[in-house]
Each structure stands twice: as C-alpha cells, then as structure tokens.
Length: 575
Image 1 (cartoon, rainbow, N blue to C red):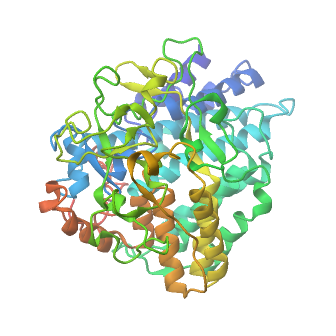
Image 2 (tube, rainbow, N blue to C red):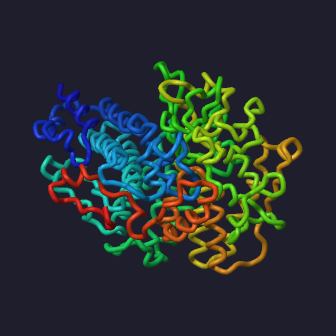
Image 3 (tube, rainbow, N blue to C red):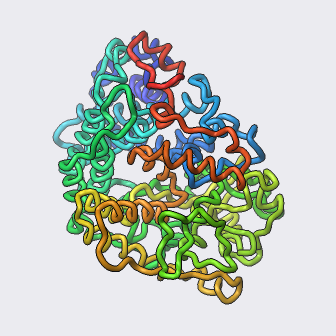
C-alpha cells in the first residue's frame, strides 16, 4: 500500500505542490521509503521507467515538450489553425498582445514540466535507498539527473526565473519555501550543468535501450546549456545580453569535441531525421530522441500526440487536421539563394521568394510544403491555394510544415487517427547537426572564423546532397535549387551572422528559433522588423509589437504566484 501511495504522489505532485500538499503532509517520501520492500532494484527500475514515461504522457497537443506551440512567437512560423480565435492564447503570444498571467497555457506547461521533475525526483529518492547489490544504480541515477536537467532547461528557456527542485528529499514545508529567484540567471544555468556533469561522468558511451541518454547526449546537452549561459542576462531589471563569456564558449568547444561523438555523424540526407519508418528511427545523427512507438499492445501504442494540431485537413486523408504551426513567408524567403548559391544575409526579405524564378536552398523543399508541389513528397496530394491547405482561407498563408508531418500513404501504419492525429515518429532532441552549429557559433564568437565557416560548410554540403525525395522537383515542377559553400575569409561579425543564418535554415521549424533570438539578445530587433514587414503577407501582425525586457519570457503563472506564499517573484514587465 505504501508503494502505491508513493507512486500516486509522484505522479500528481507539482511545483507549489497545491495538488498534493495534503497528501504529502501525511506521506512524505521519507516515510514511504521506510518499508524495505519498496527499496528493491525491481521497484527502482519501475520508478525509473515511470520517470521516462512522463516525458511522453504528460505532454499533449496544447503543451508539446517540443515547444512548437511557443515557437509561434518567432519569425519562422504562424500559429495557423482556423483563425485568431482558434487557440486564442497562442495568438496572443504570437502578436505579443493581451498575454495574461491567468492564461491557461501559461500555467499548463509549468505544471506539466514540474510533474516531470517530481516523477524524476521520486525515482532518484528511491534509487538512493537501494543497496549496493543494484549494479545499475549509478547509471540510473545519472539518467535521472539528465532528465531532471532536461525539464529544468525547458522551464528556464520559457520562464527564466524558476524554482529549481534538485533536492529529492525536500519536506512539505521546504517545498513551499522554494524561491524562483534563489539563483541569478547565470547560477540557474549552473544548477542545470551540475546535474548534467554528474550524468556525463557516469553515462556509458552506448545504451542498449535507445531512449536512454549516452555520454554523447550529456555532452551535447552540456554544450547547449553552456552556450545559453555564455550570453549573460544577469541584470535583474533587464533581459538584455550584457556580455558573452569566453570561458563558457570554451566549454562549448570542449563538449562539442568530435572525439566525443565517434558513434554519430550527419545523415546523408537531412530528411532522414524526419521519417517515421523503422529503418530511419534512431539514425546516425540522432544523439538523443524521445521514443514513440506503435503496436506495443495498447490501443494506440506510445504515440506522439503532441503534433496532433499540425496536420492539414486533407479530405479523404487527414480529415480533421487542424493546420497549426505554418511556416512564415519570412522563413521561406530566408531559403532564397543568390547567384553565388549563398543566402541573402541582409536582404533576403526584400523580395517574396518565387519558386519559378528564384534559386533556393534544397532544405526549403524538405521543410516547407508549398502550393504547386506534392505534400510530403506524395504526388497524390498536390498542394494548392485552397481551404484544404489553409483552414483560415489564406489568413496564415498556404504553406505547411513538413518536419512534423507524415505521408498520408502511411496512415494506419505510422500515422494514426484518434482524438487527433498522432505518429510513432521519434522526436530528436539533440542531433549531430546542432552539435556542429553550436561549435561553429562558439568559434565565431571567439574570433576563430575559419573553423566556424568550415563547420557551416559541412552542413551546406550535406544540404546540397539532400535530394532523395526531391530529385525530380527541378524537372517536374520547375523549381530552381542552388546551394554553395562559403569561400574565403570572414570577419568575426560576418562569421557570427553566417552561423546565425545557417542555424535558422538547418533547424527551421524545430522550435529553436525564438529561444535563439532571446539567447542572442536579438529578439526585439528581429521580431519588430518582422512584424512590420509581414503585415502584407499576414494581416494579424498589424498590431503586433515585441516589448523588450518583457516579452522574452513568459510570465510566472498567477496561480503559482498565489500558491507560493510570497516566495515567487513575477518576471519583469507589465504583467
């Protein structure tokens, strides 16, 4: 009975713990774990599995841990859907107007991610009570520290000032005394790094179970956190970047060292990272991925429902598709290449891309579905400017994202209809291309421009060869694909600009863009320019405005502030 109570509490606890306060008062982890029958390797393994499971079961279509719902704040994507009232709270985020601390989506993501942390901490607490006869104890603890770091990382990118729950044995009273400003911004990143270093020092090079993180996964994660940490935002009255820390950049270089990634390399074709078929899952570029499955004995399997709002509404195929997260015209324009095969870094948005006359990076056609081209490379579904491809009848344009969608030919095999559409396709969290980009960015910021450009060119060379699905596009559909590598020497400023653009093109529609803009300190400048230029393509931006030192982060949810007994401080801005 105590074991059951313990697991129930682990599932239902949230930060603030308002949903579990009375329960925790009587059944703290310390009291529950006094029963030696609970402290077995078998039960510890079960709790570890439970901790992994919540990273799929706790998310849903409105609160995807991929963060696509929140990337609609970037210049990569429109919210989409049927109109501005369809998912109105995400529309408010998109135009940065009318966002309230009481909006359900602001609190929902907070609760879901702290539920994940609670489940992980419950597993850690139990693991710490098992004896030395459990030979997997240190490795499982490392895995749990990795997962705890992952949840805190997602929270910190969203809210900036968060409480860190890194003591798995906190009492009821201690939970309620946690502060979200205990650490500076820099110190908060260090808390995450501390968990990751424990993981990095213990995790094996390979894992039999693909969903478990490896040493390389911890290294890639450390590189990412150090890169965020490098762009210092420690002024409590500002979200501005006050400096770029050299020592943190050196850590990025350390943890992106190629010797740490002997088992990984770029896929020959970038599209292989976004295919659900068994032969493409956990490929050579996938360092750590959230694992989804089908045919595992349950009705729908362990499917990814978090992309359920994204498929378009294709009659006879994806009937009921909601058509959210639509690529922006600005993003499409960014793929335009000049006569030299390079991006138009400074003036890509001066002209709307025309696929009949303009050269484009091949990655455009693997990222964005466009009228006149086949949806998901299936010529049975030719895209056009109609309500089939835009539920809003063109308000959000007629483009469709490809990276999250699955060919309708695979319906009932890899694409499943339930309450919404779901897929068994894994979601890659860390892929090797990102490791190269992080290394390139660190080199560029340190003035080592030749190394930075060399890494960028590796990605561009791969992009040039990524044509297995689009080899006939030039002959059949008249598009013009041309991409070339950078040549010669570049200044530090130019190299940084090149790396930033390459990062946008390579990771487009993977929900990194908004967080990158905030990390760089570019959000206000880039997004207000975007709003002004986009009005002609998407009328919803007529009143949009990004307010610096406010809109970089979500507000702390009202319900969490209220439950904190004065221990939480609201983020800066006029919330």
